[in-house]
Length: 136
Image 1 (cartoon, one colour):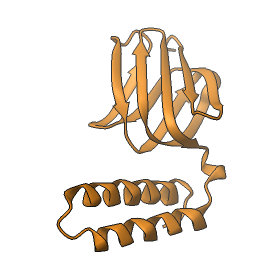
Image 2 (cartoon, rainbow, N blue to C red; image 1 turned 30 degrees about the vertical axis):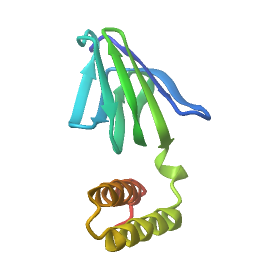
Image 3 (tube, rainbow, N blue to C red; image 1 turned 180 degrees about the horizontal axis):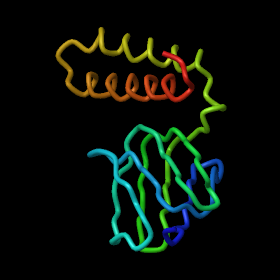
């Protein structure tokens, strides 16, 4: 059994989780990272995706997060996310509307690369929310 690492997931409105886990997977901007007890210190930007907690008090928990930062220290992980939800909190109808909004921005982007980037971010978040909610 691995040493537990303290994991805290925080948004501007609430603390979603504050437990120990044996491992945590985090969607960094450049790809997923997995953190175990004793990990080297790290500060990274969080992208859109799923945070997964394994073992410890957390047992097996999942959350969708979008935009933010993660601070990793040898004995703790703090995820500061703009938005975060438990799978059971996801409103699939709202996520589908979000997808349509992203598609609309994409279709109206013309020659503006910033609009395409914005549309891609919106659609990626909507897709992840729908997938995590268990719908395709």
